[in-house]
Image 1 (tube, rainbow, N blue to C red):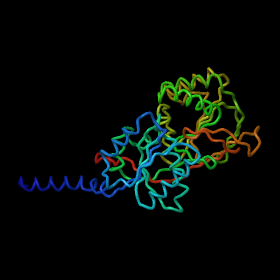
Image 2: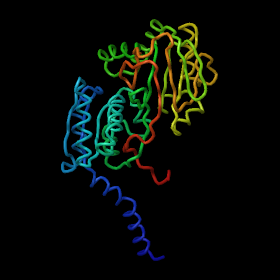
Image 3: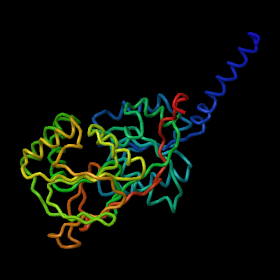
Image 4: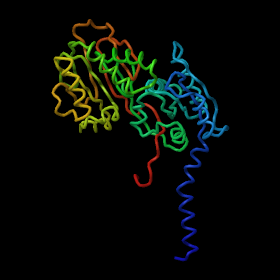
Length: 339
């Protein structure tokens, strides 16, 4: 092959690689919604990042939402606007914000059509973003919104409440309340969150009788803590092969069964740092559909459930399920080496 022919081939190859990326970002338009209460970064910095990467002609609208009684209505309006404009809905917030938008998108799909979601993570843990490879740094997340690919994602439900990370019963809602009080004073510190969680677990937990039913199995146990998760990142330190079931549309149910607070705390620490398979105080199993009943609480009475950073009161019994392909989310495109 001549040197000239080689140069033509290389130029053609370069065009083949980068031309689709350019046209994707050129044709995407955005409606941006920022949860003003999420994260500890200043909104001015985020707006600078947005203006740096997204052309003015591609930016249809930017709104800031504040938690309150009208929050869900504001979310619905943003989803309807994005559907009407055929625009990407780019949201900035933590797992609770992401969960709210995914849940409302699932509900509105049949009436307004499917909307594509892009995410700028601004929470404490950002489990959903990390599960899907979405960068947690603002500039990189915005570039992903421009250059990534839309992919269907599942969403889990407990009764009528969605969750994209986990739903927890027992002592965990108390831990959340205490943690939020501490974080309001110290900022979004993971270290402070962990210390607060340990203290509340030691001083506030009590074992409750529950009935667990999935498939043909029914069993009762006393436990201070139940967690149902669909997040790979949340359990990545547990070294458990069952985590692979999360990619197949399963949730994983965890339940503690120790008798003393100290023993159960050591079980949690052991599972986090050394794997969970040999920890007798914690039972776990993959499930696709699940019912948890509190036999000593009359039916229809409400139970506190921590759902992706928010506390809800849901009726007894609690029914868990997975909705496959609930929404479209922009995730990083695979590199050529991964394809």
